[in-house]
Image 1 (cartoon, rainbow, N blue to C red):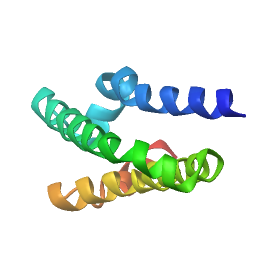
Image 2: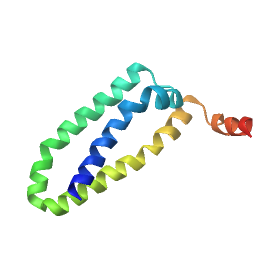
Image 3: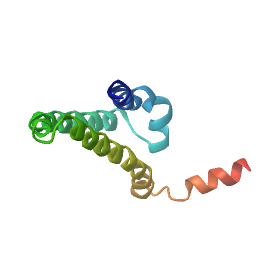
Image 4: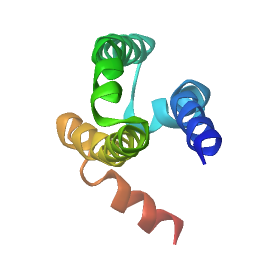
Length: 105
């Protein structure tokens, strides 16, 4: 289970770098600068969080600590759905998806 959870974690972190140019950037209208900012903020937060992760794991125990880590990572992954909503509202693209659906039917 530990191997599978760790593998899924690493794959999940690679999804953005592998799919952003062809799928994510056109959907959210990201530029190279936007991508750089997003990955920089993620890297900084990830590095700072790792400073405290060891102490936390020692305090709570490996089994419960890994469960909490998977839960936090899963909540973060679910919150990514808000990126589309926020982008649509910040760029004024609220009706674009409905217009695309109507044109394909």
